[in-house]
Image (cartoon, rainbow, N blue to C red):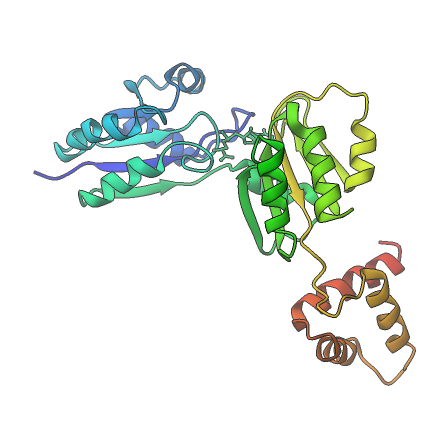
Length: 283
Ligand code: SAM
């Protein structure tokens, strides 16, 4: 007998329109939808007149229920898995179920869509070409500070999920441990009260003072300065401006020389240099 297929389907992170045509079709066509919270998923299904049967699979029953659902897949039923919002497995259940399915040689097919981390990166104004996703910051201060200490040297952009209740305390620890870096705090993306606050950690903290912070929050924080010689961005800028005075030097020559001098990848120097040029020309 042919086994069923397991579709891992991304759903909206707020705005119900953020669902792909393919996701709607798959949710309609499969024999069963396993959902983290059937009541929440019902709202989405009702919006699209989908009446596929639903069953629950959440982090408290994922292992046991997964075994049962895998048996149904083995019988030939096609199934979709959806979490409450966004992409399953990303700070959500789904991973164990996928592992179980793979172990039983069941075909697992992604139906991609929204991820809050990526949406927040997109609007952060902080480099998004490479990044590290840390999921939720630890809720306890000690553990949070320990984690931040351990990633102080991370040069890639960092993305965290955070609860509104802990945001102010988290920003304080971020400022103290990582320094006054660029940060973007995105709240309620794709929803009515969507907003993104951008600036240094201290600027954003200041603008949040005396505000009641509600909703879902994602933090995007710039990586540690790439400069292994210990120079600040301002000092690198000064070096760049100095080198630029030489009419014989092209931007490429300057990037090559700075990269050599500072033992930094050319790509990173080029990115910083482009930032300087844009800032200088008032863009
Ligand atoms: N699986 C989801 C995804 O693909 O992004 C993440 C689920 S995780 C349990 C929920 C957390 O994601 C929230 O607490 C918040 O940190 C972040 N998040 C979810 N929706 C968001 C939104 N609309 N705006 C900002 N952050 C959001």
